[in-house]
Length: 469
Image (cartoon, rainbow, N blue to C red; front, side, top):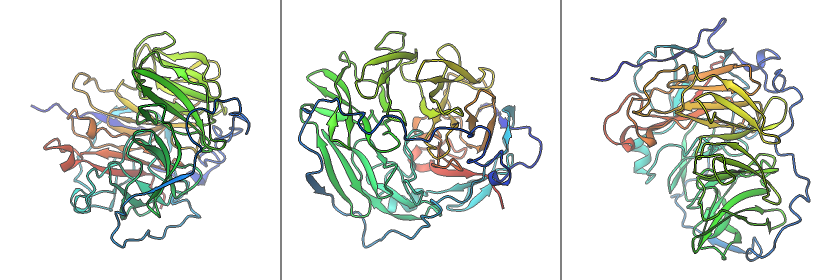
């Protein structure tokens, strides 16, 4: 017999959804949490990568390889770049997490916005299995919570799989299929046409979605393979620095590639351990390594390293593979948002000194979450989604709910809506909630209460946002 569904409702005064631009408190440029915040992408000086080794491969940008076009005469649709593809600076109201019940609603029609009956937000289904399969797009959903699906100006979206769907960033219409780098890849933060990633086995490339061409920036031929963070990497916010992993004859190295100077940092010896993932902080000042091994040692849990020298700085978590991400808090300090090493509480850990602030208590949130800080244009908030595990049925206020949490220790959250997931434990059914760059929208996966069949038959991507009409 299926277990009864218990999920979240927020008890809040005032309307269920509010326009963020209506008051100074809710505007992203004027909230108390944003006042005095450092701009993302700052950090190392332009010469920060000068003390580096130059023996990692040939000079970048000299080779070009073209892939077969996946478009049959299709051209990119027009979108409003001036608005960044985003509707408004509109956010749900500030509130707290409490537990209540989720109403059952029918599957939304493709590209139709429907109301979330609890929170007054809007949810739009942006993919359709039949339509995308007919276009030879095998995975009609976005990739992961730490992989930003919107490009730098918000006018386009790339989804998961290869080939991948390219969507309009505002109305979500399917534009065409594209063939980005075949290992991990992310949109550039500074160029709306470019996707950076690894073309296996050893090339780091820039892919242009308009021309469907890839340019090799650097080939790391001293390795048998390289990885862009083991499918969880992100570059610095200015697109200058990227943390990579390389493997050869059982030896593992972690290093930073500086795209501006075409130079490579000293190598961090991974002691033969292929980490769960590595990533740059947004400033480029730090490299974060999740070792995939639980513990408090230098090569266990999560460690912070200098972004220039890769020198070990500090240990910041005992968790070997936590679903963490790296953000700016409301004071402008770079932090990691992560589940506590000792309970299910959500914490932020300051990268500069390891100091910890609790964001949500263990009674408010469980272990089964993904964190995303891909809202680079809205620092001071992290976005959280939930996933199901058969082992862990205890219901807490975060269950089946998408929300943003303010990075100041106040416990303030904004609820974007229910995830409408079935209780089936399946990785591809996880929500993997990820915000747009300005934080006004959250993309998530859902099987919409349909636990039958395979994910390829029932899982779609959706977008939740506040309704401010």
